[in-house]
Length: 510
Image (cartoon, rainbow, N blue to C red; front, side, top):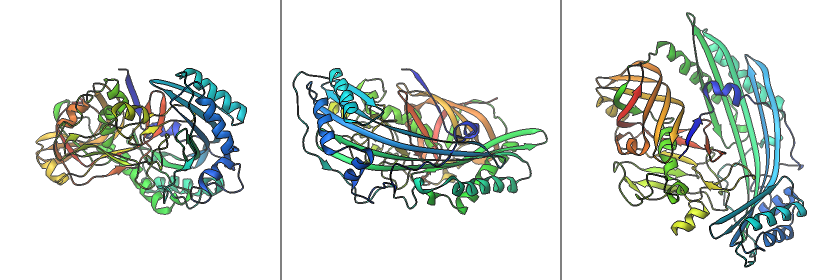
């Protein structure tokens, strides 16, 4: 299995990634198309300039070579971003992406083609290309459409980003910049960044399922660079949600500013500890990246179907402490990883991967669900209309345990408390990992003592899961800017966990 590198959009990476540009571009409509505000699929078809007759013709063409199933995925995205460096705009830009993809399934064959236009001729060309790739020789017919709708969107927007001009966004960035400078005289540089995305998705398939989804996204973050006696340190703070302009407010500015300064200031007191094998207490929240990367990917059904995951023969078996429950959840309101529907027409849902220490489910898309003879868990996700859906996590977290964080720390004679993670490397099949820990603390005689920084923790995901002996009751979702990469595709996710004790990990220090 190839090793995969991952990087949280944060830290110094924010200097290049969140700092991508923003001017406002209006949508092709007089008013933004928001789920619930108009007649769902009919309004979406009008938005994309297609008719029900067009969709049926394209589906019929997709199935004319004998496919078992076909679907059409339309996507229209608006992306804006702007960044300030020390109060001055240093990056600003916008982009629009538009197109549709046609997928055909025939037995174990998958055909896929996309076009960056939606004329009937273009769509038929894509459909026939996909049909030639996946065919069985016996033509099938699509069934009548029936729209799928939720009573309420999981990310209802008050003020859509399409209605917001750049000049309305700038005061919040300026306030974030100014607030960080005001909190500590050691601050030398600040980069404050704001990005917003609006995505319209129209989906239909040969089984008659249709839906429209309006998907907002916003990220706000800041990098803080400080100097003390010639020593330079940097850290960051960021938040990301599926929200509209109402996301920006004074309280958020104050929280992010304080967090960015505190995360940086503590590093002046931090040391690099001696390395070795020792207990590690994973802090609540951001430590969930270990759960996501080193364990969560191994629960995705395609890796198990291909037998590259260590969990491929462990379904229904105990794999960890009975107090551990691991969840993948698409239903958290406004969460970065939540979806109303996945990219295959399945409603987003909450799935227990591990229940009371027992592996109860993999994360399925349509293909893996058919292989295992189970319903899809709604994990079929894709990067854009240019990509096929594959099993992907959404918000992956561990539920609260039955002790306090203080009780966990009190049991450790010598170890570390891992608090802020930035990047690392994971081998998905085997689960071997290396994570970079930006900050944390030494644990000595059951107490947090010296701050630490810039260490690696090394281990094996499934073994680390099995070695979790205590789980605290302080479960927390990290609402940062996590983006997951897999098979060349990226998608927004979140992670989280309560504080937990891993009895033994290798710590790379001095």
